[in-house]
Image 1 (cartoon, helix red, strand yellow):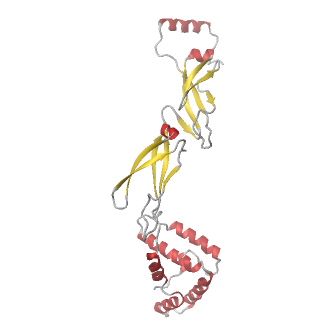
Image 2 (cartoon, rainbow, N blue to C red; image 1 turned 45 degrees about the vertical axis):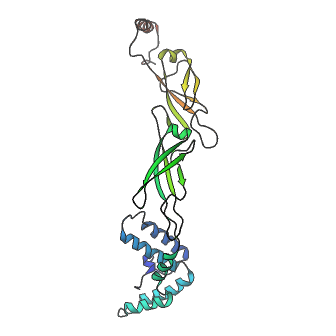
Length: 288
């Protein structure tokens, strides 16, 4: 077994460090060389094994004291001192750490890794709940189909967990889980922001000028709203409790943005009325 400088592996320059400092160094090193961050990097895989080995020795006060004696000898020893001699010292205190640990680990039941994916659902499916099918490729290369029950009122970005549908365990260990992130897609009629829903309310110029009551469609029902006299295009009307589900048994609001629509084609009578209005009206938005 080749002598390894466990302090150097963890990014530390001295043995005069506390267990807490070792833990912090370990977390930083493990994060830097984690397989998920270095996919396909065999050197990173070997490095993370060394990092784990170093932490197992240095995180226990008794084994740290033993290793410190070797570490100090290693730094003070004459250059002519053979590497074989250093290896013997390590084995004398710890035995063949790597081989013993790997032999023990190879027999332990290990839980399979979790798997994450995501699917897109419509705002209607998310509001009402729905069953959706997804297909994933398993470790052996085969496609597996899952039916995902999307609960009513699920929030955008929430994850659904399918227990035991991740990667298989080793040596009898439990399978990992499958986590499915839900992305709610906005639709032409409704846009979701938190628990509020936004929509457009199209009205005529005379409705805007005179005020009126109109029907507006929320995601699940039609409701009547009051349009105040003189409302302007771009103003918003809030309809409480007609938005998306908030996860607490209530609902957000439906917010309707007013858009005043002018007819592209006028009948003769409509044209006559507008011409008359143009003559009698004192309103001029360019001067107000």
